[in-house]
Length: 198
Length: 198
Image 1 (spheres, rainbow over the protein chains, first blue to last red):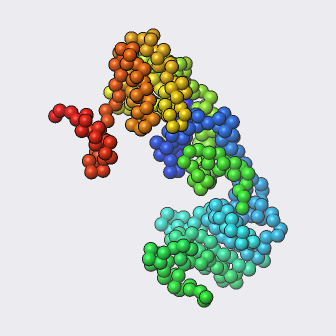
Image 2: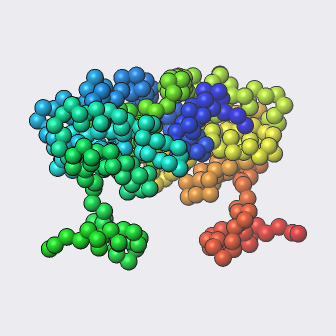
């Protein structure tokens, strides 16, 4: 049986979301019908306003609902350090630990030779512009520990080092709580190479 | 870091859905920002119209966007058989096999003594009204094979049998493709009791 049109359309909308198949979409659609009017109206409004009001910071590329993001506007943040991440969720993860007080730069992607994504396809040019304008002393590359993440960090280091800027990246090693027995070989290799004195 | 208000609100809306925690909600919200304007507008519209336009069939309780549902309006369906289900998704599952040509009755819940849900809390009264008005010969109880489903089917059979109506329920036994080795004891017991001749 086909469902009545309004719910069939809602199921279709839900199933366009990542990781949500037709069965989950159906469950969510039926749940939606049982939700309060207020919650559903709020949901629809939030969808539209997130899409309409959000944009990217003109300086660092972070997600913001104003011209510049809250971090770039914050005068107390150290302008001599820029931490480079793939997307705004990484900014949020770093901010959660409350230990980093410099600025950010959001790439919106990673260099991926396998997928034909080159340096010009991500938000990299504006990073180099920022380095010329400001007195940046260190760029910390905080891309994921994947092949594309490594390729991106290698590229950034090769471009920036000749300009005399210190380029660092996040430490590689055992995750806290990890079993040596189950750690992969590359991780173990990095953990030995980068061992620290007790 | 707190996200900008529009995305924080959208994350909150997503996380109200069942089975969606804060991490998945964040992923969905970021995905939404990357969706096309048309898709997001359509999604918001579908949310509102599903909530506004859908109601329950005045005869059987099935989900519909009209006064009576498509099945109750379909004159070719056999009015002498009513299949009783918990919710509209069960109607859809039965219709998918294209083998049942009678009518339905949707309970919107199951009798659940443990949770204090009695016969008056589900859509049961209207079933009894339907039986008085029409020439129904058989009521097939198709509730889930759970404790509440069993309680509901027992109750319906006890109420309807004295009125001379044939009450049946779906067969219990091994699911097609199931391993005997892994079948639970009650299922195996039912499968032996209800064995059929080859």
